[in-house]
Image 1 (cartoon, rainbow, N blue to C red):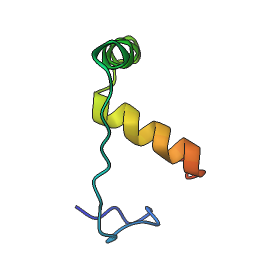
Image 2 (cartoon, rainbow, N blue to C red; image 1 turned 90 degrees about the horizontal axis):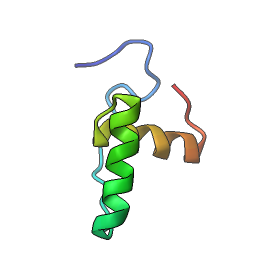
Image 3 (cartoon, rainbow, N blue to C red; image 1 turned 60 degrees about the vertical axis):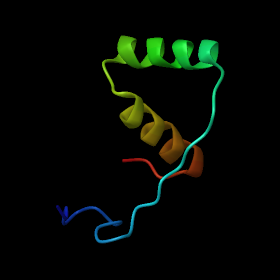
Length: 55
């Protein structure tokens, strides 16, 4: 699905991954649950904020 107002429409997506210790992941998952977001949504939000691409 292409969103017309999205400047990245049509861009190829890439996968980013990392390994976390179980305790780190549990803390992260708890934050996601508190905010009502999935792990993928929260990670995408954090990466976009870090690189300066706000929605």
